[in-house]
Length: 504
Image (cartoon, rainbow, N blue to C red; front, side, top):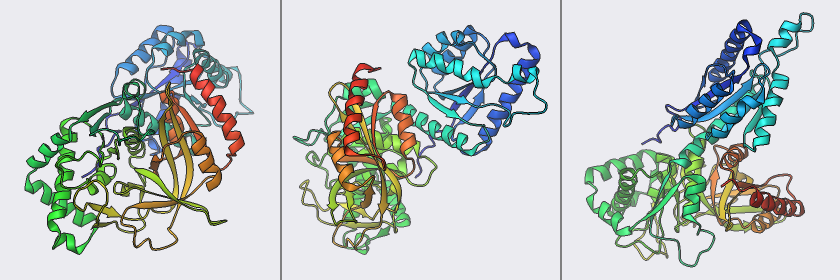
């Protein structure tokens, strides 16, 4: 099993601005040199989608046609613009106003250094990006169109890295726009933060969130063929340290867990869904609360998953999985569980009763095991048990703030557990929040952040910032420079801004 490549067949269109004023020879050089820039960026290996250079944009009609075509093409996930020469910004108005794809403004130039001894007016006439990009930038700002701005010579490795990160955010947005979320059952009773406006979510993020009766999953379970289950168990044996009893005295329970995964996957595929949620309070005739199956949704299929009806976190996990495709690490549901308040060694331990995914990276080979679970009222569920691999990560939550959605992020460092955790029969990760535990928790609570998060170890802050900008959604960030007092002020300003500037 492998996640489908979300960048397969996807393109980013590159539009270079100029005008007929410069003459045929200058325009020929504009096209040639821009082609060299695009080829270089494509060959860096840092940009996961192909950049496609389109004909030089020289008129208002040309710009509008370019933007209209890009917006209508389902394979185009973003647009990059650059002005090699001066390109009067009025000619961009109609095109920019019809653009519906994410926009990146590249402020670069073909030459790296000023040719001090040979520079003349012909050179100055051709190479005007320094003020061409300012003219274009003015119009984009005037129209209030969100875009990422990347500045630097195109051979600077940081330029390709930033363009690549933005391309990943574009793919995340494309996945969000085409997402279907399958809910088996409803929200956990009386829980607030996992609730939310599903209609508004479809309007803002594009994700269609609907419910299927658990009895439909039970029917799908009954239809699963034994051969499919046995093949899946072989996959388990190849990837995990399977507890001996699951291959012997408790094999039937392993078979049930694998059969439940098959049923969930079959239903998801039949309905074109890429994220799912369940609820331990609504399991119908299912024999077990699904464990190993949902844990494998992000790692094996690239799908989002969350528990207790929390579709918002499932959406984030799917977006995180897509943005991180091909990188080390991944995305998973996470839940804050317990603090370590020892002075100088403050830590946060996250887990969930079953559903944390090994996609985030594991210290050792995950163990596939079976233990009792005193919730859900079903037989003992099979689950993967592991500790998260040390490294940098972010935790991101989505909350419904009545008139809008808010994303909230904390940058964290995953560390090794400071003990065996031998009696804890579930997957977990231990981390140091930035800037410190007390400040991070205070700010998180002040912002109304959820106890459920999407943890990503493949992509970090910049990718989520790019995604939030594309989506037009508030993102509050807690990082190494955060203070509680300043965060509260920034939160108040952010609330006012997003209420006044609600693009949706």
